[in-house]
Image (tube, rainbow, N blue to C red; front, top):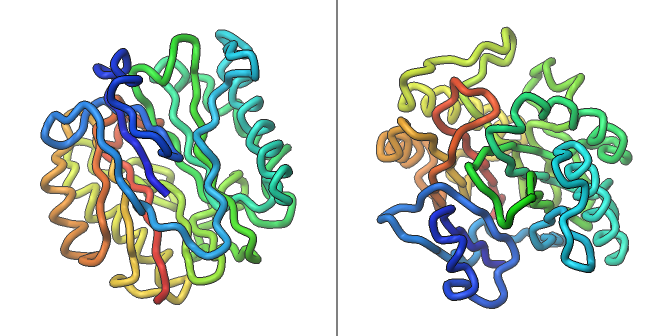
Length: 281
């Protein structure tokens, strides 16, 4: 599997820059070294039984944007489209292990309304997928308010939760185990009991807390720190990418990192969010 990252500034040059065959297309604010476009192979790695859908956009078969101006309508449409594609492969959204969505800062105020759409469509087999939400100033084309990346597995799914009660009312799970792969939600520096965002002005302190939470999920699944294989770090303006990386390299030395800049996160106090994945050898 390959993932392509293209910056907002380079969107008009996408057809010129793109590499054929990329599965996932993530629009970002910035990339290391000021690159306009990057393709990564095997990041994240694909587990046995995985099905990685091409990025789902709210665009119909005619190429028209659906539910223009309606973020929740577009979000629901993308979930239904992901389910349609999975059913064509003998699966459904019940098999989803992660749903990562990308939207814009303007949708932050209505994002909570996606809860019902997710609850109506996900977790039908008893396990909600891991999830994360990232904000970019623009997405793939005009009128697109959300982009959805979905990974599913043909293997049985087991929910992994270190004991955080907040997830009892949510439509996502800290971790989902499928075979030898642990798929995880996006994590930021959130106190799991009080729901308070921590260290709002210190991205390195946020990284220490966030990666400690990741370690709890890893251990709850029976994995070790050296089995964390990949981490996608989305860093906000004002975040210290090098400082965050130093924390990750110390705690998870075997994790291959993908790093990109974002416009913001659903909790505006967060300076970075990470999507981790672990593989048991």
